[in-house]
Length: 302
Image (cartoon, rainbow, N blue to C red; front, side):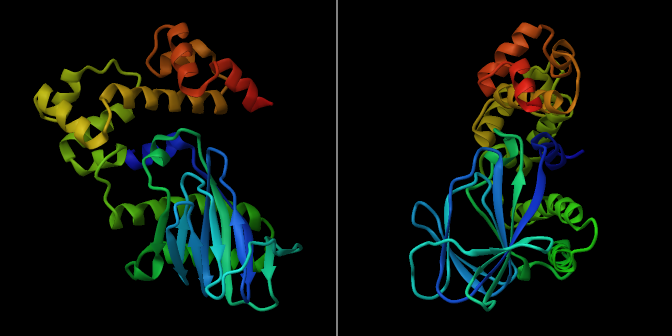
């Protein structure tokens, strides 16, 4: 797998499509800060609206736009007309998706859902507070507009298995949104910035491919075809962290996934992520997540 594939896998990204929003007139809808591990998204099928972020920034969304808030940032959706006090729309059930309505017409048509991911994800922590992708500006052969059309058709048709289908499609939706974002907005610092340097990127890929390996600076510098000092300077400048800090984060994310998806014993998981001592592994894990590995597994089972 390449770096992006590995980071998505470590983040355990899943998607859900939850609501159809059809609004008319002047309205405002507040969205609270989400819990860690939840990234809401909005897809504009038709019409226009505005979004206000907590720091006062305003975004304009038009047909074809996709807005993702990786850290679950609180935001206010607004009609393009007169500003009004936020209120609750009426809800209609019976179709594949619950429909939220303001007014009786459809000036704005949205699909809304969430991406769920492992908290403290390296990938999501490297993303800005919002991603805004204008699908109409993408190349004609880009898969993202076609996927949005498929999502809309499934939501409209309400066929058997429709909910499973749209949730599966939203996992692909995240990957395509991320791909478009990286093309439009290259990262200059953080884990994604490591991709911009082919030599440092080779070392980063090696760490992701085999986090349990006993990596040394000399071995990583050799992967990057750099001297030890040059490698450390380049890695730190691009990532803002040391190789050991990122390697520990990768190991802990992999351990979190193994705890949540397998029944492997703690000593086996410790070995799989590069720790010969279960006690040492448990200490680092607790420092990272605030609870011991066994406690986390019990909390997930409960």
